[in-house]
Length: 637
Ligand code: ME8
Image (cartoon, rainbow, N blue to C red; front, side, top):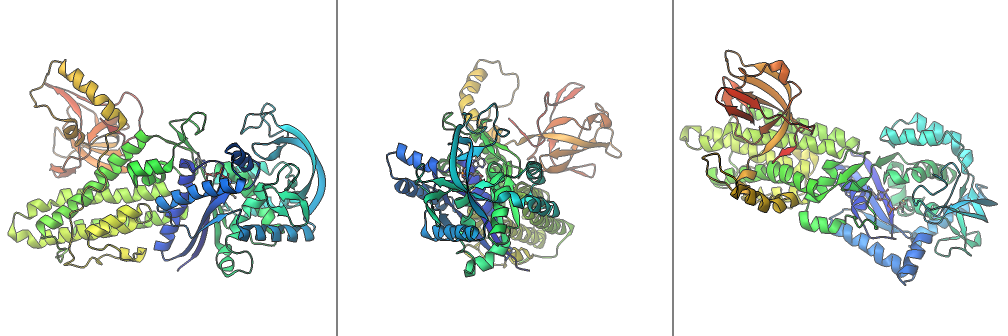
């Protein structure tokens, strides 16, 4: 049944241009909304910019601009970045827009009239960077934990929101709803925070100190505190209570935020909504933080990763990396090298090769038109079952914002399809006229699988998905998850060879060290009689770390062991001629190196999907085993 869905990103401060962290949140929100739309749901996606407050006013002054001109410029940079990243938001709200100010003032007036606000004096430690007061307990060694600067003691008269009266209600609200704040670690964090008294929230700043804000409707001497103003964007963008868009989407609102802004969203926002008589949001989805090369991104370190140059250099691999490399809720590390490794392994190798192999087979052996399939065998049923499995796993993962799990499930399917090509060997079938029908079934199964794969990929890699569909002659047609029903690829449709979707990229390490390698080689005595090969030729061998999870003797064979190994998320069977050298039980848990892209072979009735590396000298044999820990699936080069 179609569902309604409203997803928001934080509105980003305009005191600095967009960086990797902003792109991460926005790309996740985009993927989620694209997926919901594919599922037939009505999904509304909001992003925007947060433009008031001291920080913005100061950044503008430093640049010699008025706050408005400055905000226009940086907000424009966010808008342009999302456009160039192909983000599909429905609205982009700016807190300097009239439509926003109007709703903020209406809510303030309502709270004031209802006695939810009071005027009082407060003296405390104020951090100008954070634009808020800190309690003694929150300070670390007497300093602001974010800015590492001592706060200034200020005493001033302001307006306060009676937030403390909502504490008990809020604790119960969170306790009764296990998935209100997720993942659970952030729910626990907030419940722990709420064990100490929740203080009233100071919601104004005197105009004598700050002019760049929304004036309080009931006192012209004050402007609204920037967080109180900002949170309301989620409501004002829909037009506020009574507006049609608001009535349609507000009951289904979910927020997506980074862990840095958990407190305002989990502790301030629900009481604000409750006091204003508005329903509280459905879910707060909290993600972790990215570091860059192991360090916090900062201007002073000069390590701020910008999304557009990454996108220009690596295309959709950038988006793929952010979604694939992070576990939702946990911190992750970004490096160009890790991105390149993923690009080469997952996109160029696994996905790119599959698409190029399948389309080439269709062009070469079916004259470029999808053939009509003959009867299916168990192998085709296996492919279909794998597709259904991937579909189910993607669905479950997306319920929890587990983008990584969804992609792992899709890549398992890609693995199955690559092995199906290997094991059915269409190029062999093509040699015998009597096998034409079987060949047609295999080719149809491959074409149809690619069509379905493109649908599964559409939310994660929209451009790549469209390119696959283009190769299958299906470009531009609307798609939905319902189209995953098997058999929708019409026989006769024209197929084009898909050029490399993701050309392999040499990593900085590869390119930087190739000269050294060549030098080392030249001065070393060559020990083998093999002709020299280029780096590119070597790169064709996909060597991976694999963990042995089970090892058994192959029946009736003295020499062979059947190994079950884990390579990344995938489990494979390998047959190795090492039974005379190793006790099977002793191999379990060992990390070995395997050739992962070797054509499969059947040995004594067991299909072997790869080869384990071993050194052999006469009757001696030693497996190549890693000398330190690294996860299975890691590339060996
Ligand atoms: O806090 N890793 O705006 P902001 C992951 N205006 N995500 C990151 C990140 C990183 N290193 N750095 C930033 C504000 N983000 C307020 C929000 S909402 C009513 C007001 C992302 O520009 C992440 O989504 O500092 C984080 O929550 C947000 O940017 C903070 O953006």
